[in-house]
Structure formats: C-alpha cells, structure tokens
Amino acid sequence: MNPASLSVGQRVNALVKALNGAKRTNEALARCSNGEEMLDVLLDASARLGLGLSRQQLADTPPIRDWVWWKNKEALLTIGDNKPRYKQDGQQGTDGDPGPRKRFLGLF
Image (cartoon, rainbow, N blue to C red; front, side):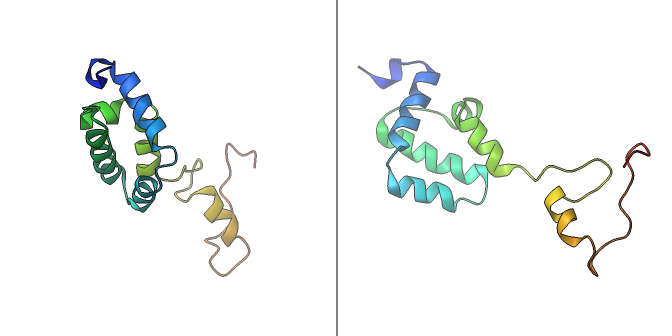
C-alpha cells in the first residue's frame, strides 16, 4: 500500500510506531532544545519512511502536536506569583525568600 494514500492521522501513527525502538532518532529528539528542532528531526524521519508528511501536518496532528507543545512550554505559574510552584517551595525559609507568602482571596 502506498503511504501517501493514507490519511494524515494514519501516516502520523505510522511514524510514531516507527519511532518506537529507533534509538538514533529518539536520541536526536531528546537532544532537541525546542519544538522546531523536533519537527526537523521528524520531517527527516517521515521522508526516510516515504510518508510525505509536511511540517504543518506534523505540528497540527496529535500526538506529535502534543510533543512539540510539551517541548516548547514553560512551567505552570501559580496565581499571584511569577515563579513555578516547585521553585517557590524551595526558597521558603531561606535567605532567598522574597518575603511573606501572598494571600489568595484572604484565605491562605
């Protein structure tokens, strides 16, 4: 069967299955510093497999869309603070403590 005749979702699923156990490709993906570099690696893998996926198709189709988002995302912020929760907890009670905790609606 010609891979180009499959739907985009089916071709992406074929790519994901091909990545399972592909040591060099997975190492290259792990070394990527952002989602755009990941898309470059995945485009190359798609071309080698003859899937004919475009950059946009990869960026818009899960699960690859989600991988790219995860690689690009920043840590979640808590309400009223500009630091990730795990960094706030580590500095409480030390010299790096910025002061008293902010109160949320007067409850905490």
